[in-house]
Length: 239
Image 1 (cartoon, rainbow, N blue to C red):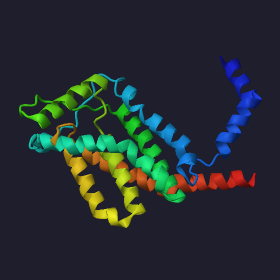
Image 2 (cartoon, rainbow, N blue to C red):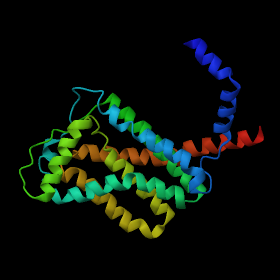
Image 3 (cartoon, rainbow, N blue to C red):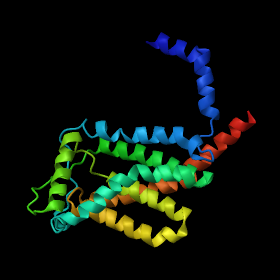
Image 4 (cartoon, one colour):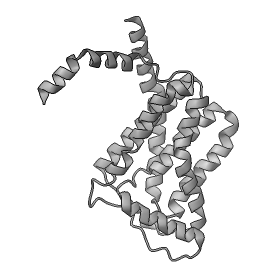
């Protein structure tokens, strides 16, 4: 097996591919040039599904004094589902419209938050104990289907809430893109966080952890990862 890997690395085609990957402008100036990066990141996001299924046991982040007081409000399922639909659309629109520097910072933070989120799910597998939905009606049925769906593709993805950190991170960069989106973005982020709790998809601590991870990814991208990437790009241009 090692010989196969060594021969692959020595192959001229591998060297050509490696050079192409290193020199390609992944954060270029248009959707077409950015599409390969976008496809990679959205494919990487799909690791969500297998990672959720590798654990048994784990723990809940339930704080009874807080979470027991959070009612089930079925109507919040609309905001919850809307966020699911928007998750892939936010990076896509950013690839289409964002200036290069802002797009780069967003995508670096996007990748970083996925890596950190997956790592936390593996190291501290947390789940939510879903209670029977006693309410009736269309929205209550949607909540029940949501709970049942979680059981089908894995449950150990509660802490931190990816629903919170994906959407909040996107909103941060959309506000940077257009300052007029500040209050709509803040309101939407708040409703999104509340929707995870009022549909009983997450506990309070899951939401807090999601917000904290967003802050870490944002600052890490801005002050550490992007500057390191810029230096690397400059070194490649000089070589």
